Amino acid sequence: MKNKFPLILLIVMNISSFAQNDGNIKLPAPNTSGGQPIMDVLKNRVSKREFSAKEFSLQQLSDLLWAADGINRPESGKRTAPTARNWLDIDLYIITHQGIYFYQPTDFVLKLIKSGDYMKETGKQDFVADAPLNIIIVSNTKKMENVTPENKFLYAGIHGGSVSQNIYLYCTSFGLNTVTRRALDVDALAKIMGLSPDQMIVLAQTVGFPPSK
Image (cartoon, rainbow, N blue to C red; front, side, top):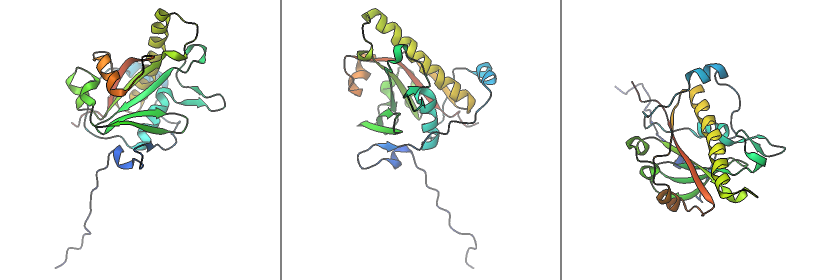
């Protein structure tokens, strides 16, 4: 007797499955509505260092990066995170098990910088290699005009911290785990990422789904 139930094929896809011929990944436009009330989010905001291996959908990734430092005023190009004098010095680099990508907020594209699994190089804690995503917050200090080197460090920290908090708020609102980190070999990671001397790694932030219970 033939089986009356159709054969179901389960296909597991990660973000690299959507890469174009040049390795870049086109993200959908972000969904900029929804989430929990801000006071509830602030009450529940917390660092969490446990992550499942579950991958993000392209929509989830687009929403997360827009919340972090996306363009919320298209007419001026200004972002969800503030910068002094509108320098817009913050860049987001996305590191997955498939490669290193540069987030282009103007056209919702992840530009491939380097293929390969560099997750371990994003930090000294064990969990950074197992999570699905590490975000590297970088300040391009060349955009800061008429500022002393000391104040460049100060502004970079302030701007990077604003982006980090945006990531925390998004993750809390949508049930994700995240933790911001500075325990990493900055010089080694900057070399792997191909950063210039003017590009300063401010923070790394791990993001992922809670482990299954």
